[in-house]
Length: 76
Image (cartoon, rainbow, N blue to C red; front, top):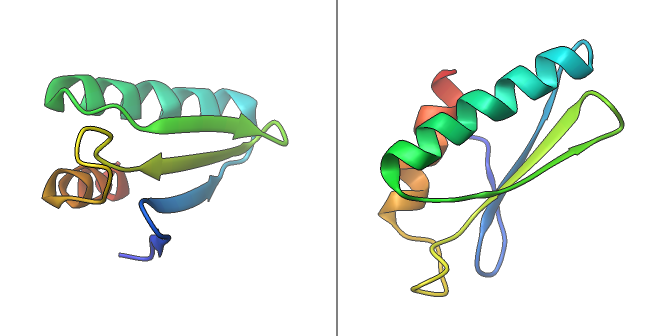
């Protein structure tokens, strides 16, 4: 997994061919996250890049739930 470990979160940036692909990816991530009742911070920028930050807000740190969601996102 090539997620970047920061103090209280893990992050990763994804680059797509265009805005439509980036938006489709964000919607897929949203479905995964909603199914886990775990909600990442998601940013679409530069029209085709998506940055995702995962942390367990209730715990104030990265937990197994974050790593599980990161693995599912990587599988998309």
